[in-house]
Image 1 (spheres, rainbow, N blue to C red):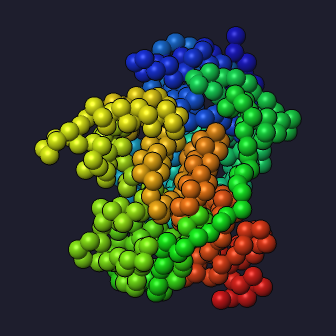
Image 2 (image 1 turned 90 degrees about the vertical axis):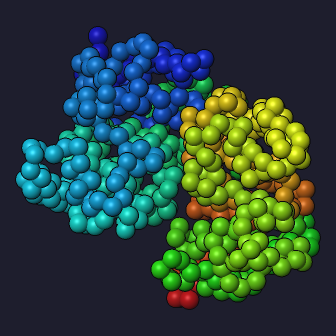
Image 3 (image 1 turned 135 degrees about the horizontal axis):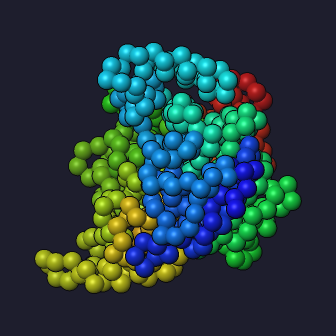
Length: 514
């Protein structure tokens, strides 16, 4: 019998996709009115399990109980009727609709929308006040920050009277301040009696936010513990099956010659707004220069200008040779020929073609490499597939199937494919944006080691990350960006989060406006 003290009980859940066993005999019980974390490596089966609970997939076997009652969830509408809401890592919002229209979409009452919109406006106001989810109901989604878009997703679920809320990697695209606000909201929801399931790879968030945490590994549930009775080290070992280094181990940098010199770099967006305002930087061989800053302060434009995606003015010199910033030769192919590799911030939009296979994506941008050519007319697909198999083994991509479409890999394994493709080209300069966004603890450790190994081979790395811990632990020097400008350079050994945080907010280390 199921226990009514639990909001959710899953018993014996199994799910396969062809030869891949995503979930194997999963048992989990989530007490009502708690925040329950679910962690595991990429490909461990977390998102599959939650997709079964939300009705996106049907389990091959097993039972679902909601508030002690056996419940069939063949589709997402059944999940919503059972009081379950889900906020996905990639939001399900119509970008040119208003907040109000997105909340009502799919929950209309009758053929005429006026009544539904009027009721929704009233209910949204009540929910916003009760749960600190302040969002303008008439704002258009595409004009909102990522943090506010996430609030809209939560409001959508609450409007549909969800008592159980599932959040899949909710802070992967949030600034630290937005993440802190989100967790205040989640704790408020819990205190109002809601049950929260939090899927995340960030152990700090688990330790600070959850009441209990379940650990998955390779499709199985390996344990559930009270958060107050465990530690990040224990959770990491349960996730990976071995001890994991939570701190980056690296020898002091031995910087050499200047690889990249940036002078008065400026970028304007399509509206003519200046996003980069005269950037001056140097990156040397054998060092990692980290760019710290709140998202939206020019870091993306910096990577895109250097990677040949965005047009710019100013001057950049690579190994003493000036590179064009607009017109002929100012594209990704020319940058690759100059020895620049690029791991973009948005792997799905810029790093992969989601409907293409893994082996086709490994060729993305490098299809004309000599080792992939059979003759002057045809690519050697067999060589490409063999190379992809080798990269998948080296970077532990799961499942290691070169013929699988990129869209069928988890987000973290998609990231590994992009990182493997770019690092394995042995570039003189690696541009890397958000290298571990949505990536589990074991893969984070691996990716960090690969970046440090590249540095130790005498390569230059420009690292952009919204994770301040990642910037501080990986970087040999830190440049702080605010409003398209460099606020200053700092040594990670002698600075601290307070000083960096002030600079990220446009203040000097002494708390004065710049």
